[in-house]
Length: 140
Ligand SMILES: [Zn+2]
Image (cartoon, rainbow, N blue to C red):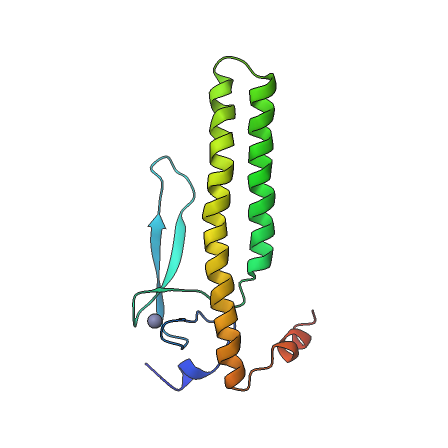
């Protein structure tokens, strides 16, 4: 691989915190539920086999989504438990468990993205990358 190119900061390219470079990566399906649930794919570093992520993935935005979605599920579950009866109660209790579970799973993911981005910014600045200039260029 071109090692020079891997040292040029690019927020759109996956960056490996372990190798401190934009290493080559491949997609790997990490969870795939049997009942047709959503697939979770991680970008994996070809050099060291660890998970990589493109710094431009905004963890703050993802975090809000996770929070809204999970509290929605939780509130819905709570509502079902309050007013429901019979079989639907199982669904209600299920949501009460699934809501927080998704929240913690999502939080773990967001934490990873946030730490990766933080480390990337430090690394990129060492190479003369200016975060604000990039934002201006994108018209944010
Ligand atoms: Zn790596």
